Image (cartoon, rainbow, N blue to C red; front, side):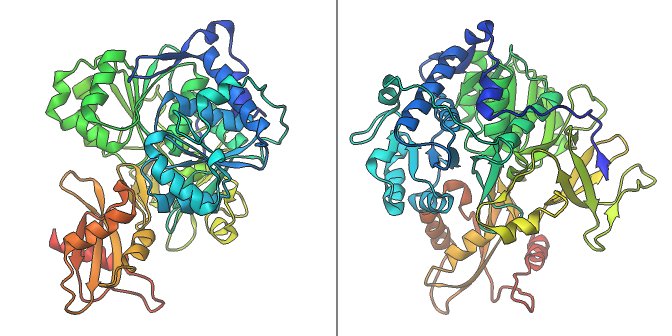
Length: 530
């Protein structure tokens, strides 16, 4: 078993609201918490806390409280912080929904989470309303932040002046958020994260990451994703930094905002690192204000990281986590220059790790002659580990063992310097630009096409070395089915990041005697053609 090189810290027995906002000083109240690049408007910490209290009061006046689940379908705008933390302040639970989801995908999540309210913005209202109607959420419970006829809006709710409610719950067991994750494989599941989980992970990250009150953070990674929720939104607010919100990624806008607002700290996914390393347009902007770039959500190769760091003269760092870990479990400490950026750094405080030989089931503890262990599946235990998957005891038992270790499904090695490297991932799960894609979800959709007899999906590398979904299709005889037709069919039914981007027709899908798709055979086939 491995222990963190960082000393254990005390995890406050507080809910998220009190941990982030109860300790605001008079000086903090005047600090800028949020900046909206679209208007240049700034929201101070004092104003943000007031808005959170008022939104919580408006919800409570409508019967929202402990036991209520609200869906939040909203891009990165300042109001997200008000609504997200207002829901938690009211004692309710929030399930954050991907802004790119179709009506059908939104419906599935709302239904599974048991959401009885939905908060959104007018550009997303068509799909939000369709999903709400499908699950029986009435118009008056669909809040449209920027206003829409027949729906409550944020300005009206805040203007009611209702006091924030007195709520009581146990932070260790009360579910704060229900993000949806595919885990290591399969269809997305609701990850039950408590107030203590979220508080613990922010407290743990504060040790490893040197984010300060003087920093300006460009918030381009979506807040609806657990990475953006914890490391951008909550950590930045706890550190009293300023967040510059971006509703969606656009490279020119990204660089413009860094230059315009003198952003100092960037949290990114690997595709942005590739752009920083290689795209010629980067040289047209003054982004010298950036001092640190932290990459997560998917593996970033060391060469790209080093190239990007040299080009923009900033410290490149990397970490590891998953939704089930709230999400961070490993990060490069700011004071350890001996750790290569290709690694994911060290264990966060208050955590234990195991490496398990996937062939024998034995625990790996010994270093080899090169100072590195054999590779094994990474298991993590700590206060940031989820309670389990919502209404899925079997899936929970497969991922979380009786001793409290979460089986990540990722293959790692431990170095004598006290840091870890991820050397492989669970093969079933595809990560496209930081988003998880479950092959099973796409396969189920493809099998619904009348001309598709069988299908399998794996992740392959595109020309930029980014993982993309590729479908292997067994077409109906004489159907004339084309690859373009397959891709268009999928694109009609899923969010853009889930689209199938390559298609190969095949005589039969390789399967085991038990009927499981032999993805390793498909990977071997792919490797032979590259």
